[in-house]
Image (cartoon, rainbow, N blue to C red):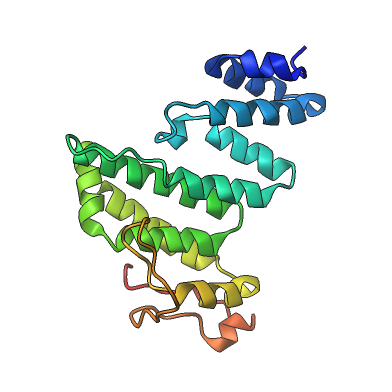
Length: 212
């Protein structure tokens, strides 16, 4: 019954999400669970709250099915789904910070350390926004400290297999506004990349940043 397309289309958002979680427990129904997660995510009216949506479950399903590129694309979209609020700028800042931290954590779990570094760098390029986000929870430095700690962890997890990608991506200065990304390569002179011996795998050194 659940495999019938007309049934899935007519299914309410909450029901599809709940049923998907049950189907996800069994190997033979996980593909169906994934399709229900996708439908639930597409009809989610609160996509600005990625952490509390079917998104994290869908990410895990994508990874389990070898669809890492789709998981990555979903995480990138999640950071853009933030309602712009002029009446509650601190809440909008909280949503931006929370979605970015959630995406960065997932990138680290997926072994996309460089992508996580880029997110943390982008967050830290606008400390005022992070402090505004923290004020929503009563702790002005909460997201600033979380981003710094995350960047340290992400830098340390970059290994020789990611050295080339790290150099290519980290030579672009992060834009503080996701809607206005940096264009073209630009060297961040305050960042030290791993030494050539570390990149060659002889001695692993954690990458350092101006934000640590």
